[in-house]
Length: 83
Image 1 (cartoon, one colour):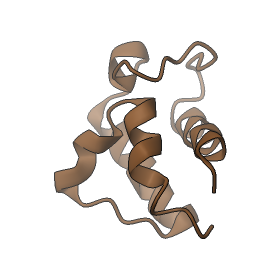
Image 2: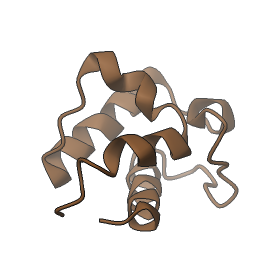
Image 3: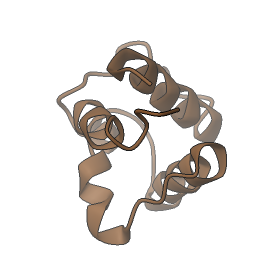
Image 4: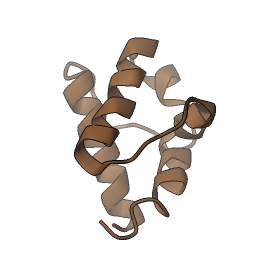
């Protein structure tokens, strides 16, 4: 999967978890939780959805790697290269 596809996929997953949020102006370099109403349980739901859909396990120590859209793409890209 390419970076732009991963970015789109992350936004789709977030939209499923917090459907009432407007994600159209989500900036890549600002913490996602600073831009939208997403609590820690919502974040964990995103991590679990990645596991369910794509078999990607994100260790708790790596959660900070998913704090922004850009860092999420950078973290997930090598893990999703064969998807």
